[in-house]
Image (cartoon, rainbow, N blue to C red):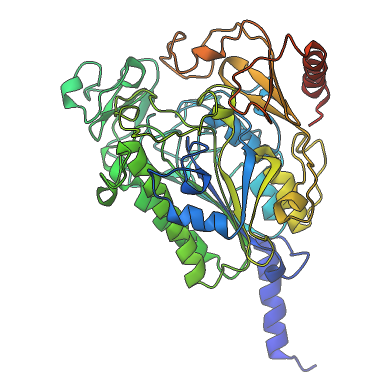
Length: 523
C-alpha cells in the first residue's frame, strides 16, 4: 500500500489537535476573536465619548466611533464580585443561596461551582482558546482548607473554564498582592512563604493604622492593614516579598501579558478577558501618566485605561486581526470617588462628572452605581451607531453563544439573553424588556422599559464589604431605603422624583414582576 505522506501528516496533526481542543463546527475564520476589556469602577461619563471633557480617552472614543455605543448598558450589580459572577455564568449572583457572592477577600473560596457552564467554558467548547489577564476576584480554593499560596492554587480560573490565567486574586487593595499564573504565584521564593489573614495581624510588617507616616496615601481603618509598596491594604500579609507587585507597574504587566496571549493564539479563535485594575483604589498611575489629566490621580488612571485599550487595538492591527475581532469595553460597576484612600479624587474633579448626573455611586442600585459605559466594535459586522437598547453584562454568555453558534440551555444561564441581534444592529427592537439590578446589603431594583422600581430595604448591614467594613459608611448608607421608589427614567434619568404616590398601580405591577423574576428564574 502506498501512503500519501502530506495527507498522512495532516491527518496525524489533526488528530493531535483534536485531543487538545474541541472540533470546530465551522472554519475558524468565520468565528470572531473576542476581547472583553472590563474596567474596575469606571463611571458612565468617565470616557470622552460619553461626555467627559476634562479626561482624554481618544482610543476608547475611536472604539465607540467605529462600533456601537450603548446608552443603556448595565452591570448586573453595583459591586465587583457579583457583577463578575453574573458575567461569567449568565446568572444573577443573588440567586446563589449556598455560596458567598459578596465582595470577596483575597483568600475566599471560589464562588463558581466547578463543572458548571461558564462564558469561557462555552467558548472553549466552541473551539476557542480562552484566557484572563488582570483582576479575578471570584475566589480561589475549595473552602475546605485555607488557600495555600505557596503551592498549587486551585480551583480557580482554570477550573472555571479558562485555558490560561495571569491574575491577581482579588482587588489591588486586598492581600495577597501577587500575580498568579495558572496555579502558581509568580516569582515566589520558597524560602519566604506567604501567609495571609483577614482576621489577625500575622505579619511583622508595619500596618497603615500604626504607621501612617510610611504611607504614600492615607487610608481609612478598613484599608490600614499591611503596608505593601507604601500603601496599606485590607488584610494582613506575611512573606512573599519577591513576588509582591508594584502598583505603578500593574498596567504594563497586564498589557504585556495580554499581548503575549493574543500573539500566541493569533492563528485560532481566542477569547481574552482583559480585566483592568483602574480606576479602583488605590489609584496609582505609572510614571508616564502621573499628572497627565486635568482631574488629579483618578483622571490620570482613566487616561491610563485609554492607553491600555489603545495598546490592545494596536496589537490587533499589527497582527491583522482587527476585522475578525469583536472588542467589547465596559465596567464591572459604576464610579466611586472616596473608597478608602484619601487621594483627593473628589477635590480634583475640576468640573468632571463621573456619573454624568445619574444618581448614586458604586454600591447603590441607583443608575450611577449600575449604568456603565458599554462599547462594542466588530468591523464589517457592527455598523457605527449609538443605541438606547438595553444590554446587561449578564447577557454576554448567551449573546456570545449566539454569535458562535452554540446552544445553551436556560438552566445553564437562566438570566442571560441572546442579544446578538442587538449587538450586531439587525434589530431596533428592545429585546431585553426587564433587568434586575443589585446593590450592597442585598438591595434590588427592577428596570422595566422606562420605569425603575426600588423596593424598600432597611437592612443597614455592610454585608459584602469584606473584613473591617463600617455599616454606617456613607458610601453605601444610601441603600437604607425606608419606602419603595418609582422613577420614570425617560423623563427623569437622575432619579430625582419618586412617583410612587402618583402611580401606585405601576409600582405594584413592578413589585409583582420583580418577585416573579426572583422566584421563577425569568429574566
